[in-house]
Image (cartoon, rainbow, N blue to C red; front, top):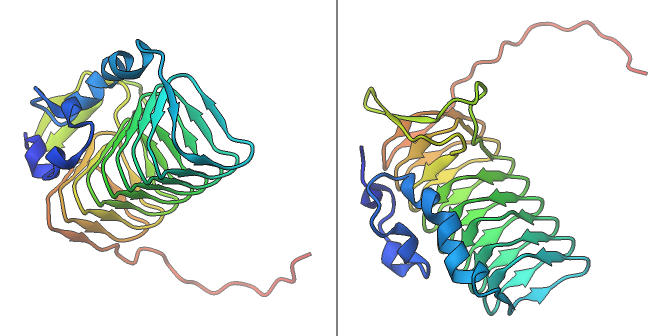
Length: 234
């Protein structure tokens, strides 16, 4: 099983880097999120908001929101969360409990982030779902992309790497996206997908399993073109 350093090469630059301490497997920081946030913001009953906030926003629970951050109108933030400095959260976004967002991150319009770690300089674009996932520094998650976080049969999620399977003992686990990787618009990752750093995935691809670092995934032309009768639509 690849170590954290295979995916994340800039952990020391992350303000909440302690979440990665004493972890062996890539999904283990997600196991620590609830306790980490409980100790850091809930137990102290912190409600620190240094952001510029648009109209009709709803911020509840406990939170730390850094300076220079801009929160768009109609955004909902449900603590406990930590949001870094100079973050842009565009209108209509939903930040759910258990989420840590680093500095200089962009969260797009209508994006939903839940129980995830999003590292510095990442961009999670409009109408995406990022559930129970870890996003590396400077990664790009394209518009409409879904990081699915639960199996259809609701069994524990497994990670498959080089024909070996590892049971995470988690029912909710989305994806690991390495530093400076890029998922194009409308991609979908099955639960337990791991994408190495500096890998680009072109739009519309469905991913599963382990994708090595420094690769480019290109979709094949699969649709069939046939003649169509001329029908005037009402």
